[in-house]
Image (tube, rainbow, N blue to C red; front, side):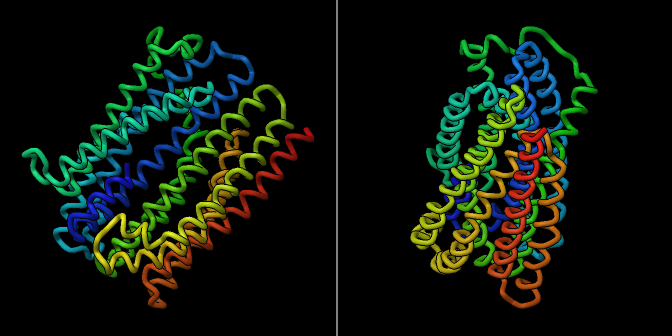
Length: 418
């Protein structure tokens, strides 16, 4: 959906793309932090499935939905407050105004999105991944269709530009939550653990336990995505061309990243189920198989991005200057595919062990202690602009990949020996 938003806005005008890019930087940070915070549901349900404690799962899901509602409302508030940062970024007044409006509108989708992620984790952890695939594809189709209507103003509707993307995505989040609830009600696979047989009020000790597991994951995701988002905001001072090119390269990289992330979510399920059964050997095997699959995909994606970087840039925008700058940045995107896939796979496997604080500290060190300072040194002080920041990100991802792989090896070996 984010790719569709940026790609379709890129065919309006550069200032509109810059506004969506700036607003999307805030949106991405918030929404990915929500994803991480809600990922505790995957681990907890997977362990209960492995242990055969199906009677515990409905209560976990109900409390997870209460947690999702609170997390979503807090995220919406923080996203709107974050737009105050735009006043300090030396943005053009029109870009500032449109970017803030983008965030204000799209934030209506955060509460349903957080609740949807609770149901997503529940469904994936009982081995039901088809529903989330179908709902995601239908949501994408809806998003593209409504973008086309609202961004360009077809069938007599006003041409809203990037703000139309925000309207489409916000509505889509509510529809996806509704679709998931209907699917769960109708599909036989959910009957043994169906969570809506009766009402539960929030049980704060349970929610606190979920937050203790989920918040470090959210902080981990925040550390990575906020580093990328901070770079997007810092690059804005170099002008519309650099800003737009950076956002396109980052947007396409984020799309490719979904594959190793999805493999990582599968690893959370498999590792968690194996540990719930008490089978540490199978948990270790699942971890390394998942890591190998992620690396294999990364080799292919790196080659694809490097070979077709000019065509990728042209698909996003018709501006020749933006295309040329973006093609250069996509070379850095190709370079970090290996380390990016490795670090996300290793981190997800570690979460399957119900260990979340170690990866959080490693990600904070890699991105905020290494990648961002180095990017500022090269991009701002050495005059390398966006390219300097991308070099910092590549090296930061490499640090994270090495440390997380070592952490996974030690953790899985310790559990196996125990």
